[in-house]
Length: 232
Image 1: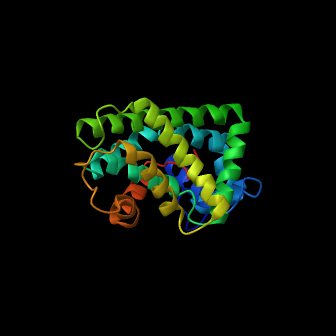
Image 2: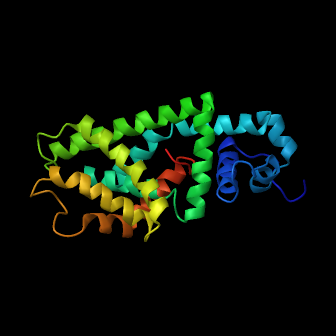
Image 3: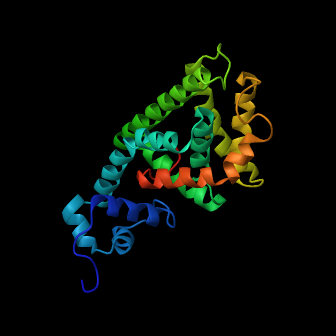
């Protein structure tokens, strides 16, 4: 194909899938859409992956292992553990830049939940993400950001539930930006456990995290690690 690269990496293809998914729902997405984004022919994708479903399974497998690198990147950007937790919440909000985008992501999630293979990948990613949140909460206790009597496992599960539930709640109300909505819910959960001397308690830490450049860096971390934009 003149003017198009003869070879693209799997990562390039997966990135192309994500771009195509951001515009088309699961019943609209075709191999031709993905091939156009990747700069190859549909036949080349068939040769490499076999079918659209096989391609989606391969990308889902890559996504399953992405949570660890994403959190490592967040830790590298954010000095304080709770700042990394807030940045992760901003990543969740990336699933809903607009109501229509969130509806597409939820449609893909429905497909993942209905497919045994894709659901296994989803569970692997979710379990890793929860462990990473728990580790950050334990680090926040050690750093004096959270009270010593915090049960990191219980609070981690609560935060996981609140972040996902907050996303769905925003989908219903659609008031303001999803990032601000989710950040407020996260702060409500953290507030009873924060110490009076915790860093950033002076004024609106959630708003600073969502609106500041750190949230943008967190989004770049997620994209760099090829975490597909779908609800988790």
